[in-house]
Length: 309
Image (tube, rainbow, N blue to C red; front, side):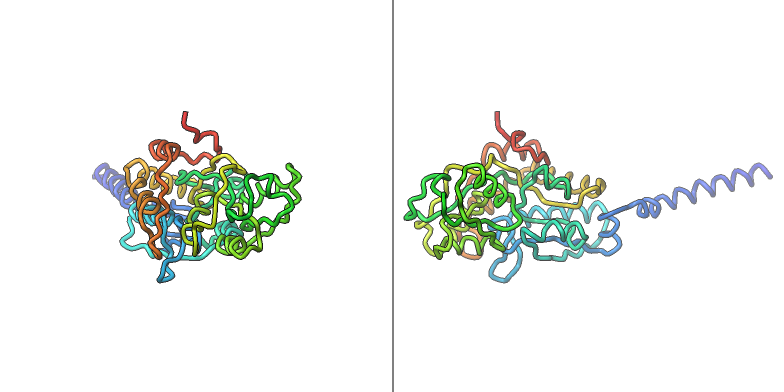
């Protein structure tokens, strides 16, 4: 009888341990995943004028290519955490505030047009690349500007807190341009400065310039440079650094979106079709480099790794 009692106690202990495994695993959650599970909410940071990645429609609702990707990530997190419901909170960010708001926990993902580079990776992490762009400038055709050298002595604007204004500042010094560089609070303000002749050129990622020109009163007035301040650079959804469990879920979600063909559908929706609120069509088919990236997703900050051989 004593032996049976001991076996019974042992069985009860094993049974108890197995029953506790679920809650114990839940308790093992850390960082962003634990916070999302505990609060039942996730906060997405969005941009208000980064067409077609993240911007406000007629109803002041954030929409765009990066927003669609982020909602796909949210669905994957909800499934991974086995949540019946996951509230999505939306917080506006700018070029200057996006990293601080991510670092201090105000937002969990930044859904926009943020360049992934080695310098930023010291502060934040990025998931798989969703776009490749180069830094160019927009100008009025009547300005007579034909190259970067023609910006000499002129007023040039770029958006504060971006890699573009850094590249412009470096080129200004290296090439001895003597240009007056003005930082704008957002892309819309920077383009308006060119529109109203307060700046000769606006340096920014080429796709964002294309969207601003397409949405202007008279697109025929503007040209985008062929020469560039950078090699093609990757955009990624930003997340907090040193949170490997969260990054693993986000990376798996974006990899699935891109390799399943869903990423191509999302891309076509925002870059080759009419988009809200004005029915603009950017007419920008997917590049061979981005197609290769979608086939084999990568979070590399190195532009050279995206060159199609």
